[in-house]
Each structure stands twice: as structure tokens, then as C-alpha cells.
Image (cartoon, rainbow, N blue to C red; front, side, top):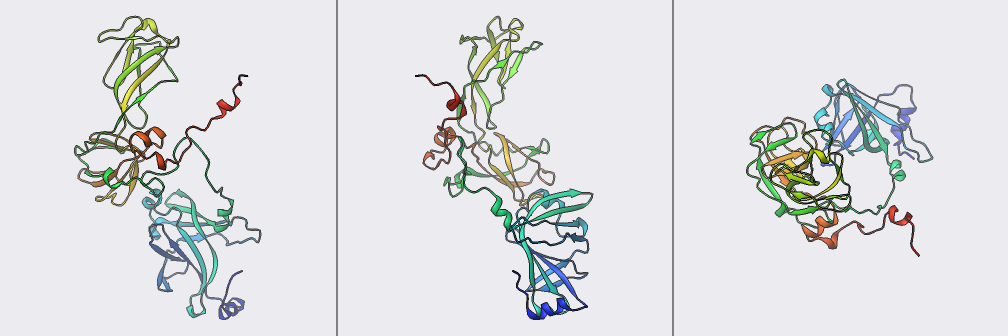
Length: 363
């Protein structure tokens, strides 16, 4: 039930009305913005509500059955402090919204709250953006609790993980830019631990030259050394330094295995060791340049080279400075061997899966 002051209720019951809506938006970074559909800026409650002059909203509806409200806002970028760059960077994601109605000719009548919620899905098209307002009742439709799984549900460095990120964080300066995702920084020389990858899936030797298979290490790591090559019968093949013969292979430093043409179509299991990228799955945040304040996840890291999962809003330029912190692939082995943090591991790696439950049981 809405609370409306007696003077405002009387004004709304009159034949002539001087009303407008005020939108108070509070972002997750704590910054508060005000917007109004009035043709001029309006100050109310100590906050100035900007007249964008270019936004429209759908009808404000509230049902008594606690169903999710259906409200959308459409505006033009050029007439709003909201920018395309900020929307794409997620700066406005999950911001809280409160919509009020006031008499702009007499603000002493107070405000009537029409709706409240959080910003939901955003659509960008032809210089405009459309954003949905998700009412608080939608929270009641979201699943609560957690589902068990093999990987950790905590984030490295958060209150549940409890690993201190300070010693795992470095500062850097962009030296050269490879593309929108990768740049070089010779000051980052950190190397991650070396672990073994045991192939249980298998690879097939191609039927055309050059009869090679290149392995791609997980967790953004780099190939270190070969461990073994086994065929489906469990027999080990022989590594050679030159051209391989039957049931032989050679290995390059980048993880490329070369086989004899006579062995084409055979299935093999390639096991090797690889180094985990020290900052892989971590976070990089720029502290200068056009991208100052923006962050992105590190997809892969090798000493001197950083690759992010998604490009930044603006081109990365040489001389831009940033901070970068280590990440975690959330596996039990990484938690145990790299961070010695098993006591805080938030996963269930030893819970049997469906294959164990459904397979025939012996008597």
C-alpha cells in the first residue's frame, strides 16, 4: 500500500495536475543519480534530478499476487549521463531504482513511491538503450541456497576463501599491444606451478600432412614437457629427436607432437606437464589511461604477456598502468597444491556422479 500525503492526494484528485516522476538510481559503487521526465532539472531531497528530455517509460503496474512487475525505460545516450561504455562495462548492473511521483509546482507535498527494484537486462540499439526494472518480488522467484559440485564456489580472496590477495597482486605498465585482448609487459615475470595433465580422452592422428597434434594446456597455462604417449592398447610409444618412425613421435617446445604418416587415424593418449599461468583467472584493473577504473578477467598469462577474456571499452595503449591479481581455476588440486587452502575449499570433488550411480553394481 502506497503512502501519499493528504495535500498530494488532493492534488491528484483535482482536475489540473502538475506532476512528474523522479527516478533515483544507486549504483553498486555507491554513486547516486537522479532522473526526471520533467522538461527541466529538479532538486528534491537534496538530490538534483536531471531532465534528460529523451527518455520514456512504460506504465507502472503493481499486482497484488506478488508477480514480477513489468516496467521498461528507453532513453537516448546523447541526452543522458548514462554512456554506452559504462553499460557495456557493467557499471550500471544491478543498480537499485526507486520511482516517485511529486508535484513539481509544490514539492512540500512530498513524494509518493510508485515502484522500486533493480536494473535488469539492457538492450542497445541505434544510439538508444532500453533497460528493464525488476521489482523486488522477482527476488522471491530466484533459487536460494547452493548446489554441490566438484569446483569451488568461492572466489579467490573473498570472505569464504580467505586467501590474502596482497602478496598475489602486482602492478604493471603496458609495453606493447598485440590486439584487443593481449598486451606485453616485461615487468611481469611471475611463473605459476607446474602440474601434470593425464589424458583420459584421447586424440586421433590426422590423415593429412603434417600429421601433428598440438596440445592446449588448461587453466591458461603453457606446455612444459612431455610425459608419455600411450595407444588404446596401453602400449607406450617412443619419443625421438628426429623424424619419427612407426610408433614414434617428436615433441616441439610449444606442445606440438609429430607422428609418422603410417600411424594416421590411430588414437593416442598424450600426457604432459604444463605451467599454470600465474595470473590466469585473476583480475586486471587499469589505473590510468582511457580504461582507468575498468576491470576484466585474465584469460591466460605467460611471463611478460597478459590476455583478457573480454576486451576493454577503450583501446589499451602503451604506458597505461594497471594492477593484476592471481586467480584460481577452483579445482581441489589447485586449492591444495598452490594455495594450501583446503580447509576453506567450497566444493565436493569426491561426491559420486551419475556415471557411478547408474553403472551396473557387482554383487
